[in-house]
Length: 288
Image (cartoon, rainbow, N blue to C red; front, side, top):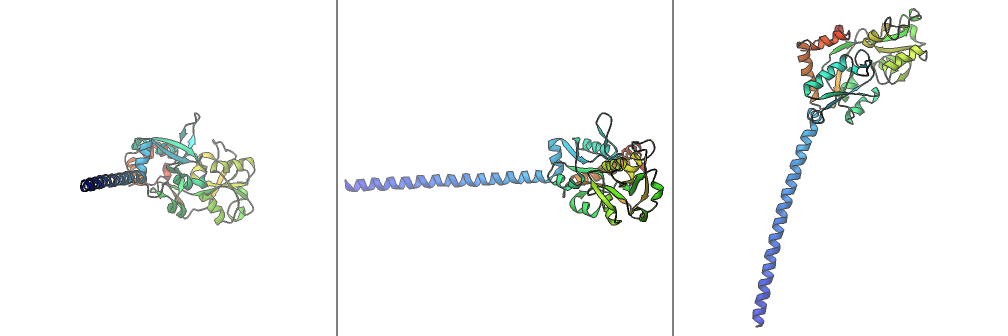
């Protein structure tokens, strides 16, 4: 009888051992499967995240970072954003199957806005400086520009060259190529939020002069404009000039898409038609 009890106890112990082993095997298999699923999902998400094009198409909007800058980006009487850059941005967004939305930014914070995904692109008459090219993925150059001095028309004749302007206090857009020219020429200057504000400073008398883009000066200064009492005089960088480009996040696949859009829109006449609408056709760089 005692031997029978021992036998039953041994059989019961063996049965429990096999049962635990089976349970343990199932758990390991489930864990392996779950881990693999998690890795596959993470890989898919990484691939999607790395594509700016997929990101923009997924949310259905291309958020364009701008400042008030006629004739490139400005508002019409109904508050709609228009201008050469604004209209090109709308056309590009349409080619991607999304809608362009415009977001005013502080120019000095443009890279931070891009990297933080507050905006998807900087498209605002942006000069392709070494600093810009190193911080963004930039498009091919599409427009020529230069920096000019804006003064009250009634005193402009008193300041025919850089040397005569040494005593003036300039207003310049913070972080702009205009600021770089003020620094290069040793001018005294005050930084303001954008070029439109720089013009306002001169018009109100709180600054003696401003340094702005020649394209903006041609559209906003002189007879028939809002600043008929102002005029633009010397060009500060006549020899080297400058070129505009569009900036995306570093590594963005939208850059290649825009470069192709530039080629296509130049070939079919869309780019030049829009340029003529805003009087910048002479500054357009052929896209090939």
